[in-house]
Length: 227
Ligand SMILES: Nc1nc2c(c(=O)[nH]1)N[C@H]1C(S)=C(S)[C@@H](COP(=O)(O)O)O[C@H]1N2
Ligand SMILES: [Mo]
Image (tube, rainbow, N blue to C red):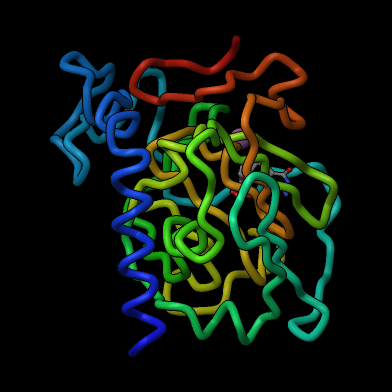
């Protein structure tokens, strides 16, 4: 309980630290989001511009599926933070667990709706390490060598999870198991499969696809795919 109190207090501090930036982010601030269909859980048209709904769940990655046992699994949280740390699997599972159903929008134009994820909020991980006020982005690193950058105000949204479970089952290796990030309000390439490190940084750094011309921001409802 004491641990939970500390997390809540740290979350409140984080919230006040990055509140302004979050309020200005497109999914909260845009009055003309691009898309069609009923309004979804975060107030946006369900299907972003240029997307088509799929029922299957395609696998998209660099072609190498790194197998990391739970025993060898580590998650490093470091960079511009007050308390850098390395979590083992059990440390990670002992954190507050969140269930959230969200949509998944791949930049290659498919969207998969209503995915029931379970995992740890990135916000709760950030509350543990406490990013400095100067932080602007995170850079995520994965066990397959993939990297991707996410703006801090997007990373701290409550539906951004480091997920270990989907459809009530452990996340399959091909979809990033045992643990991947999901970013429901950004294109899905911002969610690292097989995530191993989150670096909090003071200036933008590009990741694998961003180096190759993909957008730093990746807002689906602005059709913001390439830079
Ligand atoms: N580590 C890692 N994460 C990754 C990728 C990757 O190649 N490596 N591909 C990204 C892309 S482009 C998409 S669309 C989603 C696909 O996730 P899925 O294979 O579970 O559908 O993962 C993202 N995360
Ligand atoms: Mo993608």
